[in-house]
Image (cartoon, rainbow, N blue to C red; front, side, top):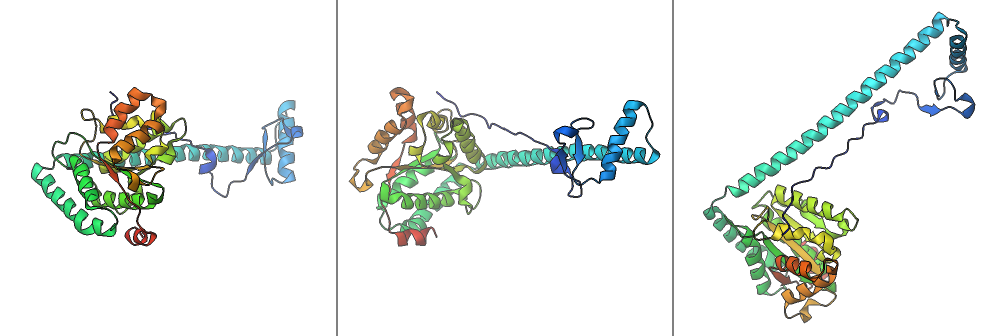
Length: 336
């Protein structure tokens, strides 16, 4: 059984001397082939006298002659500039590293504080929050979606409040199943559900984008690891995440969900996960949304094989809700 992994920190720090040089520094350009001997570089725009001094110094060095005091002074000034540039470059690299470490520590500290805050809630506190969430659904969200039957919001409430208790068995999971004409409605409803539940875990939910994990972003060969880290990051920081487009994930990438949704090993059981799934059929024609979702995901995740995909799908489709299409005007008013 796949366990939820730890946060993977991948950071590469590239420090370049170009980034630390000021605008007053002259541009360094390669010599032409005829100038390939000697120090290897000339400064763009250098005077002919300076170039002659460089050549004279190289000839004097080869012949054993000493350069004039003026030329020696120019060379010493150039060496000092190079030393200063090297020091500036190293300092810039150290400052960049320190800034990145500070951001990482702050993020980890916030996530830890947030999880402790959530886990310290009493059973009574969670009970009060569930009552508040029910009121939000009935009085604020449901009126925005007049085409949806009452059973939609009843099922959403039961699904998401599974993760709103002192010792939940698994996170609050719901799959919003929609047809070709209902994608905008599903996206808008997802936004409203995330914003309504975020305040119980992490914050106001006003910045909806920070909770989104978009299936389109994980099609590369590194998709699986990136998907895991994106989901882990949001659930650890906010306790709420939304996956848009389960149908866009390959089975090899979607297997990550097994660990996050599992009854025994899910790392963040006090959390909410809203997922959307698109069907080529209009959902009004679907009598059993759970059965339909299972059939679709078996097709989309067929690269896993029947045994693995069936075990995964059982955990993901704990609760599936049909979302009927609303008019463009309704969507505009609800999620303007």
